[in-house]
Length: 344
Length: 169
Image 1 (spheres, one colour):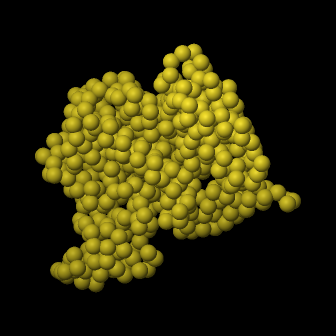
Image 2 (cartoon, each protein chain N blue to C red; image 1 turned 30 degrees about the vertical axis):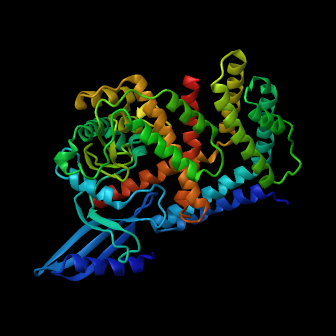
Image 3 (cartoon, rainbow over the protein chains, first blue to last red; image 1 turned 90 degrees about the vertical axis):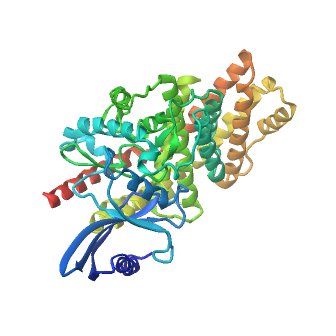
């Protein structure tokens, strides 16, 4: 959808959502570059309410006609709503719209958290490197807070499908293997060898079934120059599962390619694990964690395969999808090969 | 064709990156043009090695099948491996070699799974040979532009972050 059309339709939508608003104007619409799962826009909303001018910066997240990952905005919206006001910082959500007639696909709107950054590579250079330790420590504590949140306490018990401690690893592995089966454009023999190893060597049952963010990593949160994390983002893959799943995903070396011993370019992996263990009360058994780290590579490759597929079949030809899929697949292949060399 | 196709693509990518990307003012358009230039760079890299990597890889995989055919217990699989091992390139178009390459890699995956379940020194030697082939498989698909992109991304991210910081100061 062209920006002009989006602005027109979004103004109409706001008018319906805030009937008392007058003189609704859109100050700016800036597409936020980089998202492969949603179209995201930063929007300045201006209107007059009860005679007073109001100016708000909001984020609009719209589903792609063809997404890389098969998720709906509903999961994200519910996650933000659930965690708002808890120890897990998230932006305040405003509206969700499942009716595609407004903007072509379902979308939701939330407040924009300003004055923050999200790219983890900033931790490698001044002046942002000054806060990397503080952000890293906060990140692992927040991850622990997610894992120790009772779904019933935040209204998520009906949203997330139940799974047993014994079966959670298999459910995730089955899902991502099937995803790769569906989208693979060419054979991926190392990926297949990793899947076989994971099945032959299952992890121990989860210590407890917890809320798993599903994409908990550097790059998916907003931090400021004080070293504070202001918002955990990108909840579209949230589900119930093993607490080690998020921990392992956060340490996928893809997120810190040139500094592999630092989790997300922030703090040493061992330190991150220690903070998470202390804050959550869970244990990160090294063998079980390795299983989930190898799984993270499998899941990563499945996602990059999907990116390559949607680009190749023409359903999403954004250059970020085209190049991103090639770039990430290259690095993830090297990572998974090294992991397999450790055990074969 | 002279200049060669890969050279032309490199020049086009370089011109886009150095001349036109800096002229773009809208952030998304600038990023998309830069990524399009990188995609052209990737295609240039792939074009130069497309035939070589398929010829080398097909030869290597057929070699693994030939050397370790005796390890295979399953007669059906053995027959397919034997047939594949005897194959050779007759059509040097990339599309034709790619088709053969995909078939060989699918068979290599099957062979790998089979020998993983076997006991004995020969099976372990076969597994080792497969892993060597997979290491080469990974290396043949590496792109030099991956490192370039990482550096570019860092530079533009820092620039934008500092701009935003000034805006909110």
